[in-house]
Length: 296
Image 1: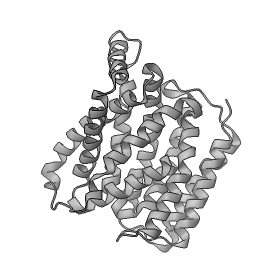
Image 2: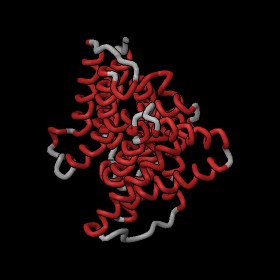
Image 3: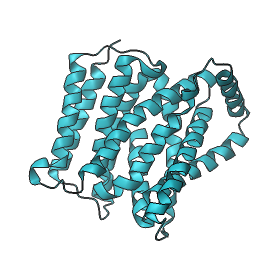
Image 4: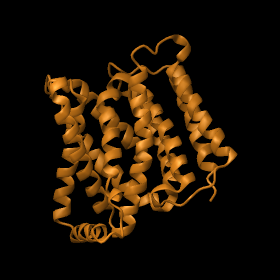
């Protein structure tokens, strides 16, 4: 379910970015709307507010590193790439790029034990799986067709964002374990992400000129709400299944959900071909192999 929600958010924010003519503003709105919703929920949840107080105290006395609250930066970059690239690539190809980045990012974090996660030994299965993830991405891009003009940068952005989601999941999981509240971890994630996007958007305005139009459909504005749900789920489950396990567990939902959206609810950028589907399946197989090779 979580993976499908990520794909849905990519579609929403990608179309919002196209409709506004400004992917930066689309990303900022997505995070800001999620933060507003979470702030209302926090106001009626004493345990979550207590968790926020605990987190501040632990950082102040040095028992928790300051970077433990910066998971929202990784999420902000993902949402920014949704606004900039998803509408150009289509959700399926965008998701393949993100999933490939996730596989490598999660493998690196787990193998090195970065950000306080359980260290995982590198195995041959994981190397093969990661290689297949690359192959799947190359197949989906259909390099031999010469169709890469103007697509490479749009593909590289979500590829890098995939790496960032591993970091986001790791540090948000640490916050959740410390304070015992997924709501607190999600609120911190959206607070930091919103602040980061506000700065980036302000810097971009002189170059983009800001939004060129305002979309009328109500669903354009729901990306942030979708994000609050799956970030809370990720913060809750990452401590149980690990960064890599969580990443792979949502891969199927992301890939299948993105293909379903492009097939069943197509938009101008939706170009699902047999090559795209084959590439997605190869990437999925690679991600599963990476997960199967997870041994501590």
